[in-house]
Every structure is written in structure tokens, then in C-alpha cells.
Image 1 (cartoon, rainbow, N blue to C red):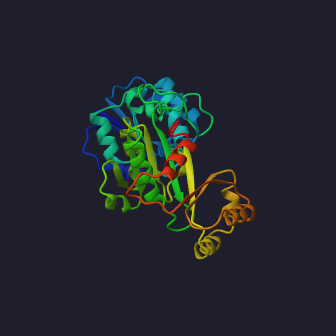
Image 2: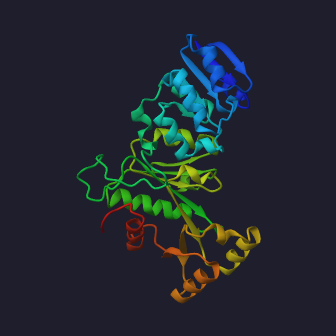
Image 3: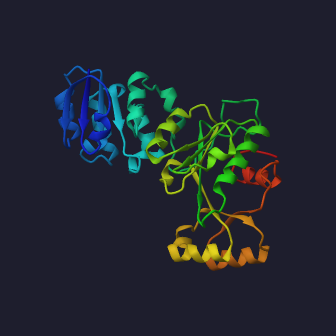
Length: 320
């Protein structure tokens, strides 16, 4: 029998056809839940994290883990919340929380097939204080280009409209797989462009299912995510794409006059470029940003040396 702790996400949990022995509604401290359930037998406790007092504070989960068995707890996390990013999830994993999701489908899956550490290890950033997680991997020791432990999640964002994130992800994925023998998953959020590539392991999903898809993706070396307006914190690194078209730049400045200040010290790529090096230098100086890389128009039907150089610069491969 299952226990439900619900608040703002009760409608998600109530859609499940499961046996329930007790339900608490409202907001509760860790101590209150421990006092109520420490001597109470239950199979699983499904916790809507909005029902936790100070749910954004990792100490809340630490206290809960001391008094209740974390292997019996399933956390339902709002997909747009601070708790849905890699850094927070990694801390949860360190405390023994292996079962967390953002939707009803994920809860049902975890009730039938609870996670072990092995299932979430690819999300665990051991000893990491920043977004980057680079080390030597043992998953494919014969590949000289294998450089990562677990899965590295790389996000892409079009800064100017139609800057080419979908096509760049496709070309990087193909080259990593076919030339360097990596396993790569591509995910796009709130779009359906990937379906037109007709390529395996290119998924189109919505915000509520991103975390669930990442949890399933434990057998890949890299995950490339077309973020659109989704939370950047799920990624280990982000690429921002700009196309230096006058009309697109002017539209960009109309939407957000402070965009270039936000891009300072970020990995900015000039994509589909036909302008001269001097024009790029002038743009970089005027915008006050560094340009990480410049890519011309690329034929997406053939391997490209430009993609190779980008993969090398990003640390996705060790050598050409």
C-alpha cells in the first residue's frame, strides 16, 4: 500500500490507479513527516515536493533521508523548478534518492521498476561545483576519444531565430556516432523538427517529460538537447547560436536589449556564417562577447571538418 503527500501537484498523482493507505494534503516539514511515518508501514511514499516546507532547500531532503527510507520514496518534481536541474538532482542522489520524476508516467514506471544507483549514476556529478563534468570513462576503453564519465549533457539555444540548433545537433550526432563510435541521444523540447530527420535516438518531447527521458538515457555517452525555452540547468554545458543577419540581429535586440550582457563568458557560436573575419571581430567587440567558434553553411549530408573541429574544441573528442 502507498502513502501520498500532496499539494500543488495532486491532480497529477490522483490520475494514477494505485492502492493508497494514507494521504496527507498541505505543506509539511521534514520533522512532521518523520514523526507521522517513521513507525508506519508502507510500500512506497509518493511525495509531491510542493508539499514539503522549504522544498528548494536540499537540507529538507537531508533531514527526511535520516528519518525515512529513501528507497521507498518517489519524488514528484515540477519540471520548471530549481529542483529539476542536474546540480540539485545530483545532491539528491548523494543522499540515496534514486526515484524522482516530473510526471504521472514516471511515477507509474518507478512504482513498477524502482531505480537503483546504477540507473541514475549518469546524472550524478560527484565532487562537481560547476556545470562541467569531464573525466576518463571506462564504458568504452578501446575508443581513444572516450573522455567522459557517465553521460555529458550538452544544450543548444538559438539566440537569433532559426540559428540552426536542430541541424547542428543532427550533424554533431551523426559524426560522433559514425566517425567516432559514440552513442548519442538527441532531445528537442516543445518542438517536432527532429521527426523530419528520420533518425533513431532523436526524440521530441515536452517540458514535463524531459527529466524522465534523461533518467532513461543511462546507456549513452552524450545527450544533445535543443532547449528552446527549457531550463538550462539540466545541462553540463550550453552552446548559444547566433546568425549574423542584420534583420535577425535587429529583431533580437527588439526582443531583449540586454541579451549580449547575458551572453558574456558563454559559449557563443556564429552559425551559418557568410561574413568576413573582420566583420565577426567587429561584432564581437561591439557586443562585448567572445566568440567560441564560427561555422559556415555546412552540407548536412556529409561529414564535415568544421564539425570535427567543433567537437574537438568542446572536448567531445580527444583528437581528429
